[in-house]
Length: 131
Image 1 (cartoon, rainbow, N blue to C red):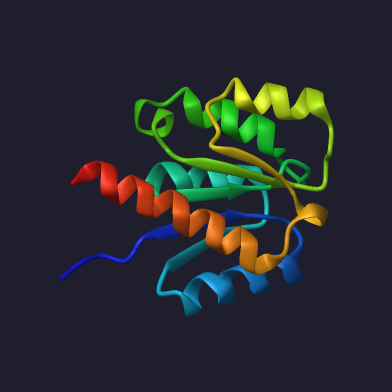
Image 2 (cartoon, one colour):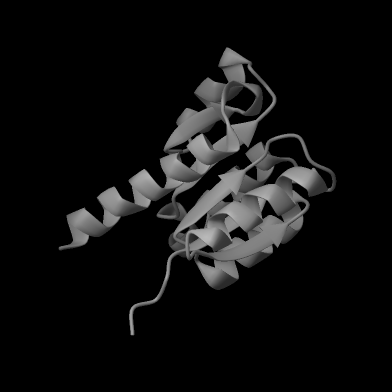
C-alpha cells in the first residue's frame, strides 16, 4: 500500500488552517496541524512530514525561530518547507531562503487552490526524482 503524502500546516489562523486542511484532505493528503511554532517544531521532528506550510507570525514561537531550530536537527535539515505568510517583507524572504525553504508565498497574492496545487507540484517533482 502506498502511503499518501503528509502535509504539516503550522498556522495560527484557525479559518485558514481548516480551509487548507480540508483542501489537502480532499486531494488525498494526510494533514497534521499546529497553531504555533513550538508545537510545529515538535510535530515536524516527530512525524517528518513530506511538506510543511509555515506561517511566520505566530504565538509562542514564530516561524523563523521554528525553522532555525528545526534545521539544527539532522532529521530536520531535509524537511521541505514553504513559507505561507502575510509578511511581504524582502528581508524575511531573504532570511528564510537562507534556511533552505522551497518557496515564500504571501497569502494575499495566492488563492487556496493555487497553494494546494503548488504543494502538489513540489511533491510530484520529489516523487519523480526518487524514481
